[in-house]
Length: 78
Image 1 (cartoon, one colour):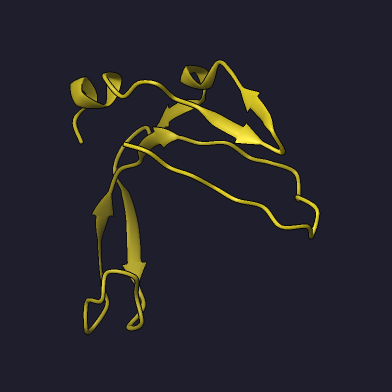
Image 2 (cartoon, rainbow, N blue to C red):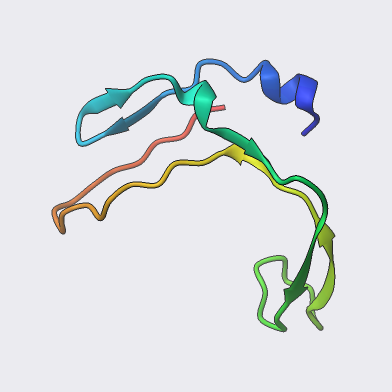
């Protein structure tokens, strides 16, 4: 998705343990340049032989401390 399209993604909402987090626009990060990667043979892209290439990252990233073992739910809407 290009930068212009990604900038139109609204609303950005995350709720953890019933608390809604705000200011999520501040958590958008982009890799400074291309980075190399290697896919194993049993990869998520289902490429039969794996392989290697270059990629970039651009998205909203959050790190959370470990949640309790109680049930949790997640929801995504686009």
